[in-house]
Image (cartoon, rainbow, N blue to C red; front, side, top):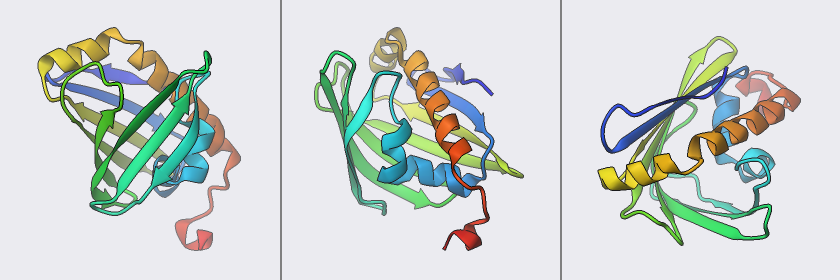
Amino acid sequence: MSLVVTTPTDREIVLTRTFDAPSWLVFDAYTKPELLIRWYGARGWHLIGCDVDLREGGAYRFTSRGPDGGTMVQSGTFRLVQAPDRLELTELFEDQSYPGETLITHEFARQGERTTVTTTVVYATPAGRDRVLRYPMARGVSEAGDRLVEVLRDLPHHTREDAS
């Protein structure tokens, strides 16, 4: 399924996509550095630094390198970790072009062996959200999702109990 982007309020962007993998596996792909480095970012962008302290109050820091060699750094704090159903975190870019910290909520809804991820991004101001909408953000998130589809396809879909 392709990415669906909506703007329910003047400060929100909601991104929805379904993956052919169980929720625990998709949750792992969103939170484990060894999986994140395989898919996170638009085509041509790659994580060169990925630190994750996955616990409420824990921090994360991602450093990405783009096709032109430039870098982008984003970081934040995990506010809620409810594996494999929900993840809430803050986000701030080092060279951010819009004001304030962003709140991101990922919901991982199970439908058998498929998972729909609904990501709600709440910006500090309407102007910040509008600025992000002018970027190729939807294209980048869609390309990252395409990369994630490939990673999930290559991972075994055994049950979580079998994974331990």
